Length: 230
Image 1 (spheres, rainbow, N blue to C red):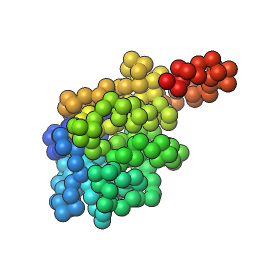
Image 2 (tube, helix red, strand yellow):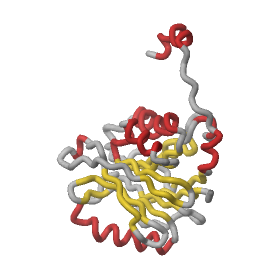
Image 3 (cartoon, one colour):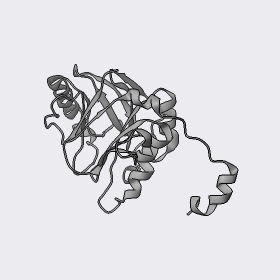
Image 4 (cartoon, rainbow, N blue to C red):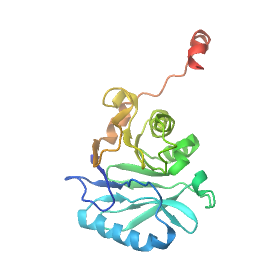
């Protein structure tokens, strides 16, 4: 399987050399309004074709749904994923109901829209459909941000589902992986940072080496209940 060569950067800036996947992220983290979507996606398609990369542009609003899209290196929109849960900041929008997984040369990709990352059943369902890489884009204000949003979101999804998660927002960007194959055994390939561009190389085949999590025994739980529930 082809290596995933990631480049996360400001919208329409050149991707890192050798990349085959570009992900846009901006300081505001806000979704593109519906009135600007057509022109924005046209420009995004031209960008993907020009650089020969798969592209995940910023979130956008279309037909009153918050969406993410995957564009092919040929400049074609392969499909879109609607958010299935609503961010309180966008609670006037509609909730989507379907899950789409996109097949690429470097693995199967699921686009996780905004707060969907905090609902484990969404990623679990996508992984059940074959997703190996989860790309999440979130809207988080400076006042809301805390490290718990990383741990309970993209980091948690990687550990529970044994997949890679790429997460971008206006407050942090990171790449997570199951702890056994992460860089320092902490569940991160690229730790949370705002430094751009964020680049990484991921081998989906490595996920096969991750052993299923062993359930805790009742005796272990009884002995360590206080620590587990702390």
